Length: 323
Image (cartoon, rainbow, N blue to C red; front, top):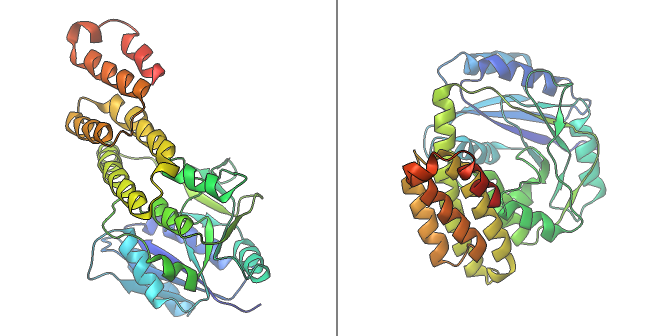
C-alpha cells in the first residue's frame, strides 16, 4: 500500500496555526503523502515557514495563486492541478488530523475500489483538542445525506472525505465564485451524480478548529453567510429544476430557506432588511415557503417594524419560536 495521498491546503495569514497543522501531518504513520499548500496572498510569515519546511522535507510543496478568484476554492482547485497522488484530502491551514488518519483512510478506500470517496468522522474544538464535540451526522441512506446538505444541515465538512483524485476531477471541482457554501455545493453535485461513498462512524480522525472572531470579522461572517446562502439557494433551485429533481427535494429546500430566515436573517433584521425582502419575495414566487412559515415570518417582520409591538416583552421572541 504505497499510494500517495495529496493533502491540499489553502494558506492565508495562518503562520500562528499552520505550524500545528504541520506537526499533525508530520506525525502520520502513513509516510506516502505530499502536502500541497497554495498561498492566497499572505502578508505574514506563513509562506516563509513553508519554504523552510520544503528544504527539510521534499514532500512539502508551496504554490501561489496569482490568477483567478481570491479564496479557498481557487486554491484547492489549483492544488488539485499540481497533485501527484491517487487520493486527495482537503485540509485547512488551522485544522488537525490524528496520527493514523491517512493510514486508515487509504486502507479503507484500497479495500473498497467501487467507492469514489469515503467520509470519516469529524470533531470540533476551540483551544484544547481533547475537549471536542463530534460534528458528523449519520444517516441510513445516501439520499438522506443529500437532503441534509440541501437543508443546510451538513453531515460532514471539507476534510471529512478522502477522495479518489479521478472521481473528484469528475465533479468539476469547487465553485470559485462562491465565497461560502462551496463545500456543500460540491458535495450536493457529487451526490446528485450518484457518486458512490461510505460514511464511517468511528472515533474522529479530523479536528476542525473554531477560532474566536473580532467584531469586524463577526460582522463580515454574517454578511457573507446571509448573502452567500441566498445565492446558493437560488442557484441550487435552478440546478434541481434542470435535473428534473426539484419536486424530490422541495421539502429540503424549504427547510434550508426557513433555517436561513430563522438562524441568520431575523435576528439581524435591522441590518439585513434588503436581503430579507429579496429572499422572501423569491421564496414566495418559487412557492418554497409553506403556508405556515410564510405567515409567521411575515408576522415577525411586521412586529419588528412596528415600534409599539416590538416593545412588548416576549412578543418577538414568541413569534420567533413559532417559525
